Length: 110
Image 1 (cartoon, rainbow, N blue to C red):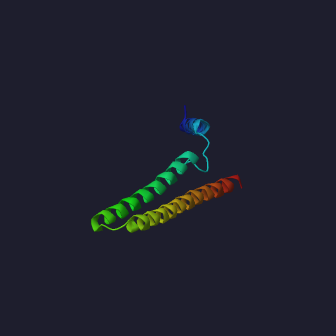
Image 2 (image 1 turned 180 degrees about the vertical axis):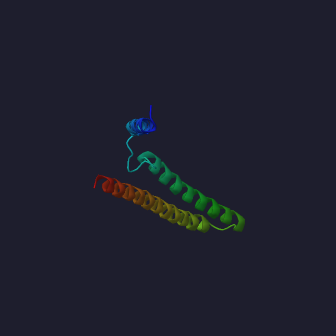
Image 3 (image 1 turned 120 degrees about the vertical axis):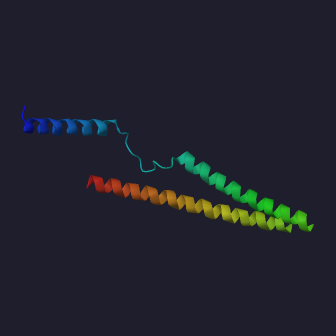
């Protein structure tokens, strides 16, 4: 067997291996990083965390200072605002990833 025959057979073998690897790879989805359920749970946890932390700070300040629940209401509302902001940031991040994946998929087809 000559050296050229071996090189040709190696190239054919590499092509077959690459084809087999591509056939076994699952189809990639645009939202492969976050499924819908994972993203929804992440947003719920962010909202509840913001509310809980705000409630805790407000309750703690009211207990320390002996005031009526003014700090409780104030910090709970601030926690709600913080939770919504973090939720929106997560949604924008997921949307940006999905848009980038769709653009990359479109480029592959063209």
